[in-house]
Length: 263
Length: 255
Image (cartoon, rainbow over all chains, first blue to last red; front, side):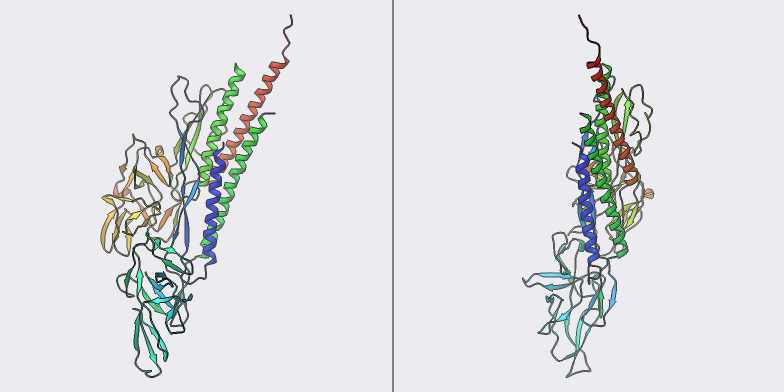
């Protein structure tokens, strides 16, 4: 029957996914380390049809074949890993990565996850953990008698203790991971990513070396969502949704015209 | 029988218009598909009344011109006009600003696309969203190094070294390219791809080209095709009335 209906339905579904993606970006506008996504679309399969007369007035076959498509599909939601906005917090355990790289976290099942969210805390043992309680990898334990914590731009963690408040003691080193293709990482929710076949294996290194960004203590990286852009995208997605619904109405009208022909 | 013939013409016209609306609906559904090229359909009629024969296909053209009692044909062409460019901030998004197409290596041979929404796989090879390799002048492109940049002429530079150059091709009659789906275009067998000379290539990094579908033109073309469809339906019912009168109201031949 009329292909236009199915085609327009695929358009509406695609725009719905687009709105869902935009809504998720907007919902995470204040999420530390969140990276915005963008929905990418591609056309579906095509069919060759030859409507109208099959032979011309001299009896030759009509060579014209018209390709008719069957709509659109969502092909990927691309993460944009550009740097988010910076907020100063003055908390030494709030660490921002300036440039490429991810913090490594140890998940309870022993596997490693990656995050850009540097709002770290201390657990009961004095170990550095993220907001969910996952241990920073490699583990750094702050001594009980520490009075001040400092993290250098190359990731060295040092403390002043109550017994020695003059000379800083180095107690650990933050190691960051970068990926051949960070855009291929799998988002796991809770601001963490895991390795995927598309991302490639992590390349570990100290901050500031081998193309890995530097750590900046006392700052947080907020999301890189641009509210105005997202709202503009949302309006245009809604209008595109509306246009496709018009196609359905139109195809419906045509079917009605056909039905009215036989009285 | 003249009346029956015009019934037949109206039937053909309705079939053609339905396909035209299908094609327009597909253009509209792909209004947000990156690098999409719309298909322009042209309804033509050979015979005595063909006021628009030879006119260039434009959206909405001759949708309403449907001369009665002539032959209906339909042809289609790819609209090769460029779409608007938008900034994305992803360094593997490429937009072709001038003429030409990116070349993609598919299982069934070279395919062409204007969709430059590429990414890198785990071996840092440049691929399409479907994982097909994007071709450089010397084969697939592998971009080593953390930061890379794309020169406007398609040369990819990473860490101060030239990694390769995007293969950009064009055709004598690009409007004859056929859609394969998934942003890919296929060339008919009798049309070969020709490399675009380096000075004519303009590629922008961190940008994407939108589809070249104009929603307003498309909707207007759809409305006028739908009305033309309605007119043909009206013609059919009128012919049916006339036929009915002719059959039922003629004086009976009485012996």
